[in-house]
Length: 133
Image (tube, rainbow, N blue to C red):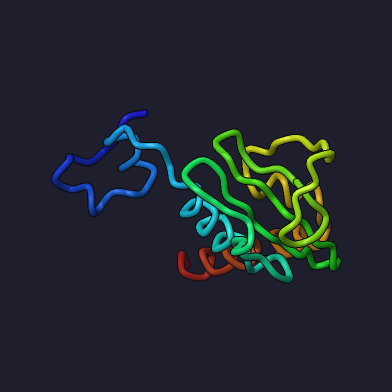
């Protein structure tokens, strides 16, 4: 991946660009906060778990879908996966696949998420259309 900033401009670069430039490992706690901020509008509740320990390599996110289903998600470099069916609870016997993005994971779990995401996209396109004319 090519980075479009110089080391002296690191404060102006995105978090991903800084990690590549400095050869750092991403802090999953920060990644988890970004995930929550990206999709909070399309779910009933979503927050980084304060009861499960997070670190550089793993973070846990609690999400309640618009249908009222609760999940505990694990975020690692491999992606996101469901690790429990209640907040702050990891079920080691649960076998679920990793998703590369939170969008893919929520799309597979929640029709309400798909609808909210689609509506938000349509609204944004309408605003762009109005601003372009």
